[in-house]
Amino acid sequence: MNRKAVITGLGATTPIGGDVPTLWQNALAGTPGTRPLEQEWVAEYELPVTFAAQATNPVSEKLSKVEMKRMDPSTQFGVVAAREAWADAGLAVEKDAESLVDADRFAVSFGTGIGGVWTLLDGWDTLRNKGPRRVLPMTVPMLMPNGPAAAISLDLGARAGARTMVSACASGTESLDIGLELIRSGKADVVLCGGAEAAIHPLPIAAFASMQALSRRNDEPERASRPYDRDRDGFVLGEGAGALVLESEEHAAARGARVYAELAGSGVTSDSFHITAPEAEGLGASRALRLALEAADAAPEDVSHVNAHATSTPVGDRPEYLAMKAVFGDHLDQVAVSATKSQTGHLLGASGALESVLSVLAIYHGQAPVTINLENQDPEIPLNVVSGQPRELPSGQRVAINNSFGFGGHNAVSLFRSV
Image 1 (cartoon, rainbow, N blue to C red):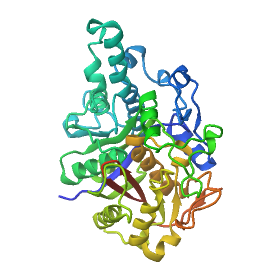
Image 2: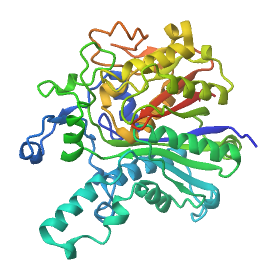
Image 3: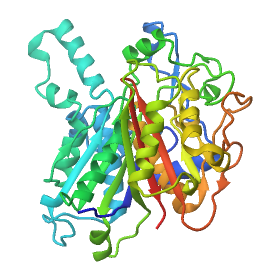
Image 4: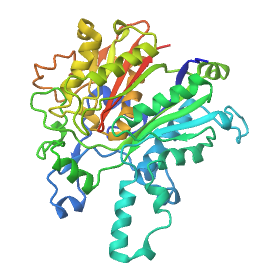
């Protein structure tokens, strides 16, 4: 069995928009999502980095107080994005009056890079300062990395599995790889995929800063994330979630669903090189790209758009370029490349899901979103970057790729095709 998987619903809560329509509008406008942090702990801990890309909309707009008390912020973001994607797809499960999905054929595949860091560290502070009796009984369910997948499964009634992919910054994209396999193999008719992250906390900021991974442009945070620029000095930590509803083509057609695109292929590899640094020539990344093309029965020349991983780190951006050059050859000059982390910051385990949402919208609307802060392009990365204004993509069938790479040497690629 090798069924097609199509995308029928999208959801997001991000540093440049609390829902998909706002996200898309701002992605085309080139809106910076990075802002100074106003929390007291920035000064308390004398953090060397005083800004981040925080979500624009508080989850209290979408969740009840009881829900918020029982979910880590990462799970809160995931549930908000999943509910939007579910509503966008126009779906219901068998427990509702008008059944559209058999719950036993509906799965969740949702990733995170870090998980419930706020719950874990707040619980540790409570234990130290107030003793074990004051540690909340929901602490373990809230800190588990599978918290978002479990909460979404419970919320929407998915009984075909609640998978959790934890592969650092490739987690959201790898969740789509799992979802594609579930659809193609016939194990599920519908899979809600995505990723969530809420790690804007003093410890992750201090730790990433200690390893020289974060930009330190404290005086101009809106210009800090600058992929491919000669003066890039690190990534900007972001937060939020992205969600996509995958559905078998037959299931979507039977209910007359609106289809954004086909998830036509994916590729997952590992570098086996270094725990944090990418392999310098992008060999693992290029293998993932080739696997995605092969799975989609697509040629490199079919691709018109790439939403790149492009974190804005001095050592990270060039290997991705080399991987794309090895796969696309001279055709790479014709590929419109967007580096949307320049706007949203780096959402870690949610980044691949968010950027997949943007990739799908790019081929659905025929426009590639903007890369901001590219003032002096690195001559060693001569990509055809979409800068200044969004770019119209070629008419006809469009193919877009999203790249994601993570600490530990994880490489994940999703390939989307217009329908």
